[in-house]
Length: 377
Image (cartoon, rainbow, N blue to C red; front, top):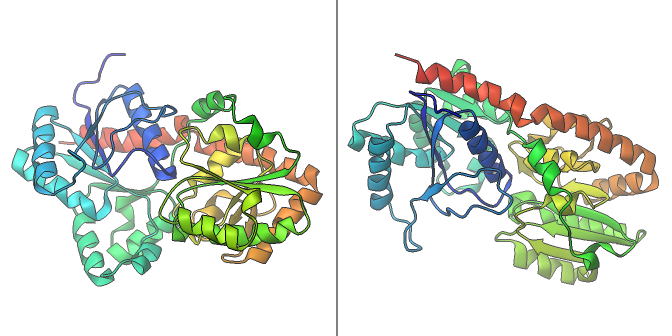
């Protein structure tokens, strides 16, 4: 495919591996590349491309020799901007986007900015030490954007309320899902020892961190084990992994819990489970939900702010339960265990719902914004 003149795109992410946000970023890179844009991908941290990554291009890492300072990344970014002459810079760095402004000034290149907001800022602010300083900084940085993409309506509401940004500057575009790529990965083999037992298999996938609240899922699973011969499979890694393993030991359920860690291809495991559960306290979108739907298994999620309720219609294509309620999760699990026909209906309608987020559909909205900025005088 011939590259399109005047459509040079610099995409800057914090990292490209790990969670749902990163997998959505990979899909975005792939579609930018396949549509004919001249794409340069930059990450602040890792440049490792997972085996199952749908993006086949190179990634430049600003992290050198295992260290990350401020001056060298800015200088390197400035050289990249001068060399590549991007028409548009797409960033999901949030407050960290200030390094782009400095690099651009040093490079003396005029560019347009698109910021992607993957967080629910109202929830994120609760977790940081200096919320007032963050508020001021994020307002200044986001005021420099030409367009801001929020991954959910809730994320957009937070941007308007917290950053005082005009609604006309914000566009809601849900995270894109590469359906064909996922379908191709479903058939990969898995460890037979993990799935040979005739147990009800419950699975979850995500970063092991406090806001994901896998502790709640362990509490619910403890209640489930009192009545069902089941297995809980946890995919992902993060700062809470050791604590979660210790808590499972404390509950005396470790023999029925399997920590798989980070997996390049989580779909081959999800598709072979009976049920997917998301127990988060907050989700800006809930990418793992649509991934599980694409794997055609029923989904239970907490009705946390703000993404899950925008994906799931309760009782139609999934189940929503109150936040931080282990009893509600266990009751929902029992319900789907007892009514396999209803569970299958949820899975089938969930698969249809996942199709709404297909990258072929979602990327058209990205393209309109990018092209309007590329051709702007």
